[in-house]
Image (tube, rainbow over the protein chains, first blue to last red):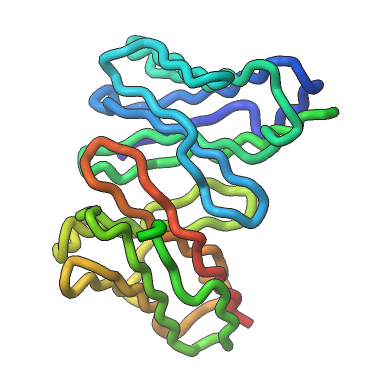
Length: 111
Length: 113
């Protein structure tokens, strides 16, 4: 099955700075990579995703990059705000679209 | 249809009792997934359905766990003879196509005492 590793486990940034979270995966056949944001006590919510036929995708302050050769993908948050504070999970699928999740990154944005 | 619904939100049970959780996916989604999440960890895959067919079960899903989706709509997850190690958040998710992102429900938090 897929093996997903995520770093760092915790990240603190000053408001307005950028945050980067990195994930690696093992299955070269994986072709879709979502990122989820989970606030305390709430459900994981999809914030951005990328398919393997593109190398980068942006949505306002959030971007995801994918390097298929190296089998890693990253989440970039620019101009961070306190409401960005949450746990972020990356994921990669196996053939049945069941996802294997990373262990999460707890992001704290310091006002 | 406002999203994926799970019931109950919280369940406290004594060790050895059976519990059953329900998930109502987004109506047009034919894929339904069950995950388990413990504190500080990412969701762990348990099982998934395409329509009414259960297509895969994780090794995490012991014989005490069973899931059904009888008419391809809602699903139930039953845990028999609960153990303290079963305490976790049980998340249901649904999706329309693969590969594609999930919509998660709010989860059922199980506490086994």
